[in-house]
Length: 193
Image 1 (cartoon, rainbow, N blue to C red):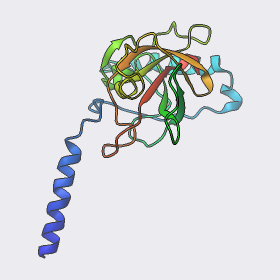
Image 2: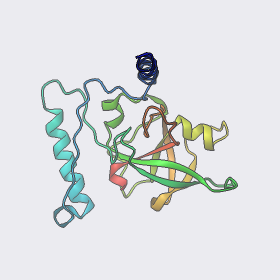
Image 3: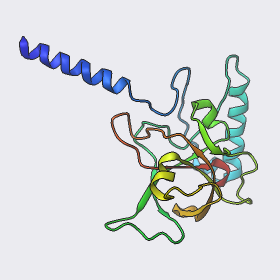
């Protein structure tokens, strides 16, 4: 019975510690759903964009909804791509490379999740395939890869999309769970997928 009490005490202490960790977003009042679009019908990018825009418009029209957005991967689901980050003039670190997790997001994603903008701007509808390829990065990205330099306007190569220009910096989100430190994050406009 003493062992059981000790184990219960340790479990309660661990639970309190985990609950005190800031996930980097506000989960209160957030409702999520997952969609998978059949490739046969939604293969072309324009068709997918139109579908998601219709869904977001309908969700925004619902009573009580203050913001609606989507992302390729929700935080804390242990999902999402991790791609190599290459910065001009910066040699790769010994023993590997510099990596960041990737998310494609809609324009209201940060507002819906209450992820704070620290500097610059968030994605807009003007960020399309035909415009400059842009990214919003996390504070961890700036700390890890930019050595104290002003991030807005810096370019880097990232994943299959090629070169991107940083237009904004947002707060850090725990994308891999509350107990794990997350890698730096890169958020890209959904229209540039």
